[in-house]
Image (cartoon, rainbow, N blue to C red; front, side, top):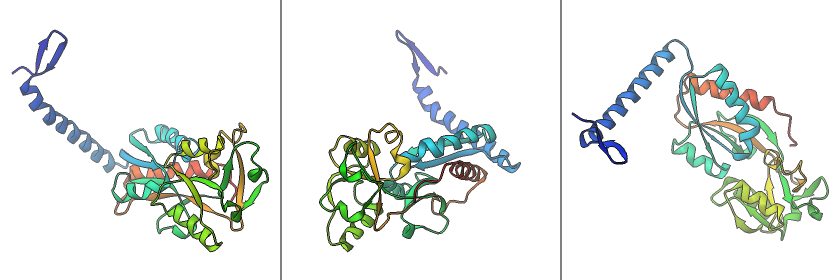
Length: 257
């Protein structure tokens, strides 16, 4: 029986071919799964690992880890989803990702979270901005300041709102954006200030396209952590990815807390 039908523009599947195709794909997937299981039995890290990562950690943390995995664990297939930390909880709870590199406030640290770095939070503005001209800026100076912050619901937004309420004011959020690019561009162009961790500031800070000051009084420490999704039983592939990311993070210079 013909699997293809020839026509003026080439070949297309016959009706029988369309019926056979999902069966063949299923057979190939089962074959790959069988190969993975056999390799697991001899202690070889193999299989797909789905990793969620905050945009600022892709270059400095994840890419070196990916390079190491290609050398030492070539049978691990890594699928990367980029998302802000405000979106990461949903990805973990819905099992869209197996592991996540994300920000958490120290009070939100969970059992099993592996801390990669402790960092501070910076107020970000355009070059020449008088508010970020000094190395530090008190949190109280955010009163009345137009801000662009991640969309709600967000544990980070809740933390910021709670601190502002303790100091007797409400944050003036003029733009919500679950996009690191939008947040940085808004700050660089003077549309609104934003609050970011140190990994998110490059390369614009070194190119002097934005100006930053560490937020103090109180400080706003955040942890960059590696989180495993609830209910996941890690296999050798998961452990290989965890080890590679931990090694990559430890090789990074310490950021300001």
